[in-house]
Image (cartoon, rainbow, N blue to C red):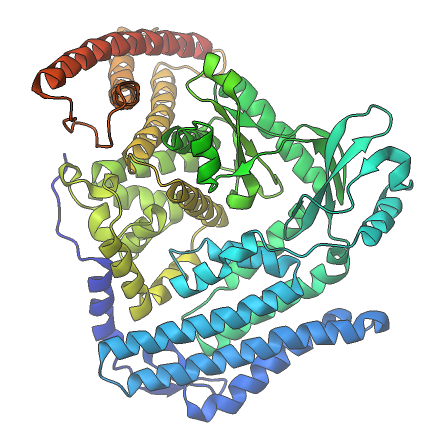
Length: 634
């Protein structure tokens, strides 16, 4: 165990930074703006500039995008004005709130003023996003998951956008189907539901029956209006974040609009989504067939139309459905951890970057219990936003997580730099962002829990307070510097963490971290095998791992490092199975259970015997895996 170093919490870091910045003098920028210290807050002299520039900048962007289209000019101006006016009002609201905070000495009053301002602006923004629809809904869904970056008033206000999406008329769908396929919708389908079974930000899904085969299918149809408004909406999004940066230079979120501009065209092309779905299905059928993952089969796709098999289920937060069907929430949580760790660390696996609650469903499947430990299916929808993680980044990312779990601070710093290019000055921020935990817990000794212990309300409050005190500025600047793929990994981490929290499991985060550690150790193990082979002069068609006597020791050492994590996880999961079989109450691993002293001893002996058998099976299995891997690389 590496030596532990005393680190301040996020709130303490903010207080240290405040000493350096809070007394910064007023300054006039080259563009004539007057800002105050590190907040970049515009003074009263800039009030008119705030309103005119915020409204005029967004309006100009809209008219430039659609100035020549007379037919849509009125609607474009209305749409642009809606965004511009809300932006101007919110900027002015924050300006007045920041001024009021400077005039009060009461810390609680300062927090109250800022919280109320956050809520007012979030409510205004939500109204604009709902009225505008399209990519604004998509943006709001993304923001609702950024609880590591935005105040809770914003993230919780935007949660309804995950389900509350606009619905396109049936007539507009019929016209688009004819336009895109050259045939009437009724020439292909014998039945087609007029009302969608689900609506998302970019599309809606209808049930239908293929006329020729009678097969029941789900048809995903892009909102017809997106083709008209997507260019304008992307320009408005970009202008909004540029405006925020203009008046609050330290609060630079342009990287977010840049990611939208890159990702959106791919998400709007359903042929890309079809290929992502097929590729993911192939990967899991070949590399993780035991996982109860269901991906709807794609029958055919065009740019705005996608026809697939009908796979329905219930939302993951429908706890009453799971409880009534005997679905173990702990097993659901563990299955989600395995699915998304396979996507991140699996060789050649694609990463689903939008796993929010509306894109994942669960259904009871008792037939699975005959061949697996689960009695449910996890259904994964919406495969438009995918990324591939380069092998070197995947390996460094695995080592970073192992360092976090072990509380190894020097290695954390090393791999944070390798993964994101972040130096020691921003290292605590990145570690907190990636784990969703206060940095003081990230670097705590593992024997005191570290990131393995459940997050308490006091920790969440401390993190929220640190963000409100100004740490958010540093976090925004840091995220603007990291590679885009890291931003998407952070987004996936946040969304899956939110899904897990919604399950209200009994085991805490220990099992998820053990599953994560297993995937990380396997990634490191295969890298070590590759290095051993290279040391032996191997390459394409080169030497075997066993060509040098000393390689045996190196392979066994690498294997044992992986085996330790595998055995820990197997023992923990065995303990959970024994508890369930005996109908025991909740309690963490290693805790005594209320079965009496003699019953406790009998239980411990039985667990010990079962552990020995389980470890023996695991060792033999991993030995076969090592041998097979070595033979394959020979």
